Length: 86
Image (cartoon, rainbow, N blue to C red):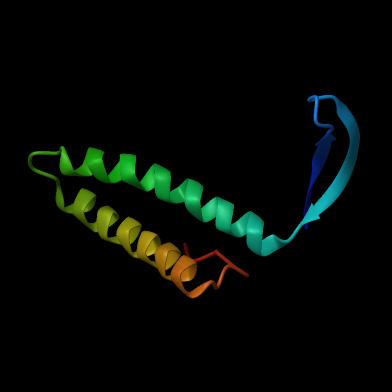
């Protein structure tokens, strides 16, 4: 599991404590899926900008879209325990 530092501030904005907290793998995976989705928007726009994609480009795009859809399905079903197919 991943870890991060949590900072606690008082009402005046002064740091009063820090602690290391563990982040569950499912939360880390969900964040990874969101990052991949943001990159996918850019990649898909680039592909759509190609006037005459080659067969190889079209095949690669289908593979990319399949992975993207798998990621979306995992988010919708809250199945973020693994994301190797996304």
